[in-house]
Length: 136
Image (cartoon, rainbow, N blue to C red; front, side, top):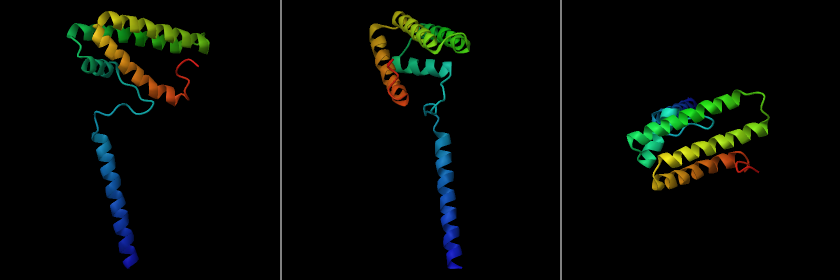
């Protein structure tokens, strides 16, 4: 009888811990997307706007640049005629083009901050890819 009570109490305690952990995780609305998850365009723009303190005009231009990049990225992903290397080259060129647009849109201080943010975001991707994110 005593063993059953102990087992019951242990099971209830485990259930309570799991419930609390699940609720805490569900309430974390500021968390970054999970691994493999992507931010929506609006989430990206909002994040960039907050980080760089964009004006409404800059926010509109950044949105347009990211929309254009996203559209072209989708087209590249769907183009089955491209080899892996060709696709990679076109993606690199597309990102450079978007980067040039950002340089025109942002002030020099904002652009410098943006470059630092991008390099910090790229580090986890490089590590996840086995250190091959730098073109090696």
